[in-house]
Image 1: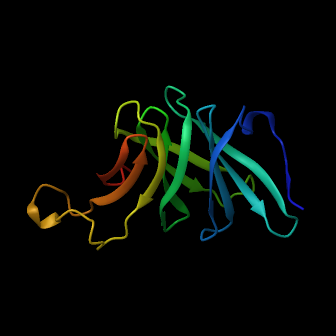
Image 2: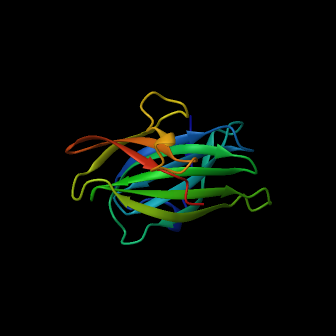
Length: 166
């Protein structure tokens, strides 16, 4: 069975609303978001079946967080995530996985985009590059590195163009 090492400063206070998992960097990592406005990162030891919380980020304004999605797993052990809120915002976050013995993960808050004021964000899905739903970059209104994020919220579904702000 799985077990979680509890560290007072690295455990959500209250409900956990979403989880996502990465296995393509140097270790297995579980990201969680909750009603406490925190994004937490935990390392998973597949041999001992233990989950060890190692890092947390309290997002500005401490909004209630509803969803977390990995947008991209870059080289050099860095991941880019997007977090949704009950206020209709999406917040971009980078996660840098340290190779040092302390096993830390540095979480950095980036840009916040309001998708629909007051419309709780329920789901986010990044479209693959070259998707038929992507905007026409050649039209000149968007940057070459612009991608599209589908955002499901309390008022419907929107295509949100974005560029990673890191």
